[in-house]
Image (cartoon, rainbow, N blue to C red; front, top):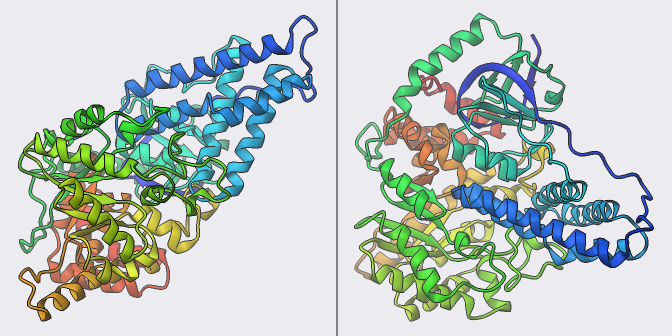
Length: 572
């Protein structure tokens, strides 16, 4: 038996045959020149047509996807006709290169630029490579390598997988995903979670697994084993036996002692919201409004925005829906709002900060949200991403008030917001922890890079300490309000809407740290609810204290898992 250890990104234990993602298209020969029978103008036109064809293909896929997959496909589709990419290729064509060689070299150059920028922009480099190959396939008149199609279920193994491919995986056919590269917060990993697909990323050397050989995959521990034996088969059987217990949520998030902890859903549009409501989510903890903007070269109209938001609000009448204002920038560029030439977009003008360079878009969006809320029965909360200071929080609250929105809040994604949460919560009504970015910024570790996966782990004690600081800031703010005889002196809500909330074990720690709600992909609700009901609030607080005091993410995770015997009973 041989073991490969990566990072587990979604629970599940399976045994199945290996099927490899086919290798990418071959590189056009270096120095390949334009054929004498083809003019540069004709080659450039063919290239533009190929880019437009790829864009249409990806937009068609996006129309059939939901949630994170839809967002990624729409953003990748835009890359196929990106002016920087196409202009660079045409320049090479004019210098004598063939169209295929030109788009290859232009793609390599743009991808390297994005990679060097680091942060979330590094993830966009994968999209450029994917788009580059798809354009070459169109120019050659061949099909781009696709996910293999076999009659029996299989485990897909790849060096890495383009998000555009992950978004179209059929969980009935692909029963697990293993990649040698990637990271736990990459787009591919996030989409795998949304699909409920057992997945392991950053499993170095895994692509060398033998085609058609049987392997064991544990999506919780990140272990991939060859030649599975009785122990592995027993583990799979236990998972299958217990999985039924983790498939249904009754709509009541609470701890074993009866302490309520609402479990909400992260959604990206009306279809997601309807599915979350059917899964009995207790509201929406994160509505990503990018779904309304991505794929547009101009700002969507007021009426279009109202219709899009209302479709989500209507799925949760009488319940809380937390809507995040546009989080453009970094890995979600918009031609009418963001600057693609920024030297470090992950630390640049993104989220709320776009208001400083393109004022008006935010206020118009808030107006559309207010109109949609007025036409629905949902209880609408609104939060801004990438808030760093109390002054920014105050400005956002003022804009919400101007639009007629009564419950403004902020995302806590950068350490400064966590450390000054008391003062920020003096200005707004709630906070929500975006643990994906909070982890990345705390550890200075690009969340897309496999080699940094160990650093980019929400179990890092430093990240947990910042979550604790945010909650303590809310408590301090309440005491301060009480001393000033302010009527409502209870701590303002501090929820979690990052991917960490979907980890049933980490959810116990978050509960112990005092968060007021957890929001996750709807598929994660049953497992999180089941584990939370095995502990009391006092036990959760003890485990949270141990996790924060640990010396490493591994130690923190192991300490908590060892103290939760119910995990084995539940097959987790």
